[in-house]
Image 1 (cartoon, chains in turn green, blue, purple, cyan):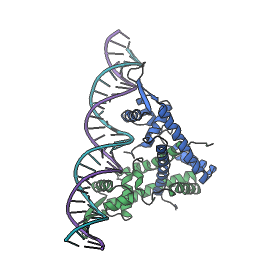
Image 2 (cartoon, chains in turn purple, green, red, yellow):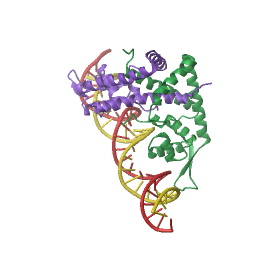
Image 3 (cartoon, chains in turn green, yellow, brown, orange):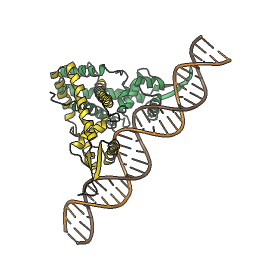
Image 4 (cartoon, chains in turn blue, orange, red, green):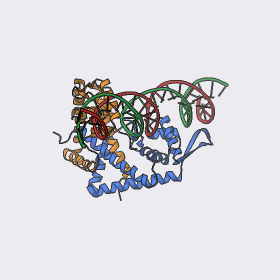
Length: 158
Length: 158
DNA sequence: CAGTATTGGTCAACCTGGTTGTCCAGGTCA
DNA sequence: TGACCTGGACAACCAGGTTGACCAATACTG
């Protein structure tokens, strides 16, 4: 007999996520990044982690390369990255993060951590750490790689 | 000093949610509901909870009435609900859940609970309950009503 | 009761973040 | 040289929303 239903659990997880992320996006807007979206942050992080081409980014984020190309286009448009064709391989277009892009993830990281710190205060450090450990278990048996958070900003599943 | 970053925490939450929901959708497909999507389930639950018109559903799910109308159209198309104009108010179109719709949420609820039960086995009942209590805190201070899970299947935030 | 305000629904256009499918030019390797 | 990857791009589409404009029916008010 569960005190809560499984469906509620799903809503709790999603609700917590959205609370956290919405807060970050909101705060980011007030700090000079009004057009930054979560998917941008994840993409820039992936690029920084080594995804220096569209195909590369697609693999990291576990999305199609077309989707990756669109994301990159959005990032370029907002000035977070630039692209230039690879001299060694004409097909390739190397992605480089601009200072503005660096600024974005720097701020974003800070805000994420601030919100987490607030949660830590409310829950207690040990409790939050425990919670994260438990969540990691649920994610851990997933076929999806957490290092590759692309599935993050996705559709619901098709 | 955090053992984990705030950004990771976000990913853990989202990852757990998607693991849970993907599992439910997948299993639902094998049990005769191959076209059921999470948003459908949430919508039918809201309807069952009393949202008997499009505007009503919109309020419950905290989406626009146009979006609610689209969702209802999808539900009708799939045979989960039917609509008929209210005899007492010609404008209104009352929604009624079909047997097929009842079947969907019955199965869905069962599957959600099954997955939750598996998590419970892995974590321990007390631990999972604690986790849910903690998540409820994060969601609790939200302006959004958890009884109204519509914000659930949404865009990232605009 | 008339007149105004609210409410339920619909159409149309658009957005985001993805998806297929098709295609080609440029590199890789037998 | 020829057969094959691989990076990228174009086009069309989808889900699940959004705005905005609008109309008809009901409700409220003087």
